[in-house]
Image 1 (tube, one colour):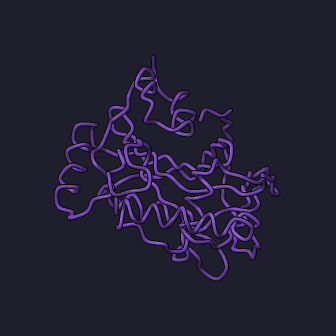
Image 2: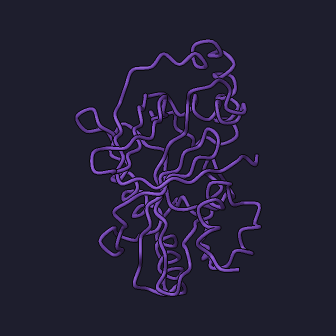
Length: 240
């Protein structure tokens, strides 16, 4: 589904965990459970673990004109998240907010991963990322930077120390999806990064990614497998 995409630049994230009685879960529980049972029958590898969605997202300015994105997260189950997504994001005031690492090669290509068959986003092509979960919570705060670094290493084999992260974030608002993107500069050219990721995937028994894609031209954004938040982020950064 194509939605209007808005970009914002912020200096830091202020993410906390909050209690939330989600009406979608409470009112449609029977329908959600039936949908989940059908998904698991088709893909037994699905696990109904805990994930974090956002109930509050605000942009604000601190002293010194520093821009901040404040996010209030709440815990739910993966089955609820998938049903909400697949039912068309019913209800207002809930967001899928997540962090993504935009790895940029020394010859100005971006690393994207194609999600593998066992995943809930099979075939989609986007930056290394994952839905935040309770392991990202420390003393009531949600560490999206830590989530981003973990997912980069797990999905691609690229260690956070091998790239240079920007200090600031680009926030991509795309309807109920809010992508917090951090640019990560690599000293390797595109071909070497692609080869590196391919080796990592070959060593895994159940890799999340099917393959890596290197994007260096705006024309490549026409690929329908790219979500709108990826197109929105990359379009101003790529040449024709």
